Length: 237
Image (cartoon, rainbow, N blue to C red):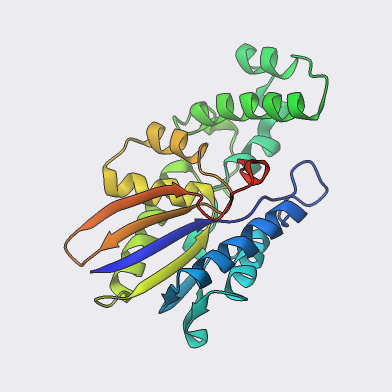
């Protein structure tokens, strides 16, 4: 039996000009996780990582400390995050005039940065629940990936990793909240809506573990944060 360690990237730079980069806190989260793996003497036989900059940077900071086979560090496009947020930004100006619930949420005031984040997440959650049900299908350009296609892609990633995993090996996959939840949800047989909701509670730099054989996959750990003793480092966005 092998073990897949799924890691969400460190905190990204929300509300900045470039979200797809680690914040200072996100860099610290990733470095602390690498040191944690080192202290636990975990040696990774293979490392897979997604193509986003926040995923790549997280991988680099972890591998500065964690033991690994440097010849087996492999980019896997299937570990890319879903395009729900990108889709929302693209079509929001159009759909807001046709969705009174979304319009009411958007018009709610906020007073400080924490309120802004909560407001932002309420809007995103509302949008996402409708997006995965194809409520906005008529407004979405063809170049954006659908939720159902994303789930299929994550299932493919899990199969590819399983096929690459030899008996007794430990594999690290550095990705985002969506793929972590989708792979865990696939193992548990969760519905699409439950997978989406699980993705919202995956902490930055958290570790989830899947025990794997060719015949069976078992989720043994989800959203683990033992490397973060400081509560202020436990972030969702």
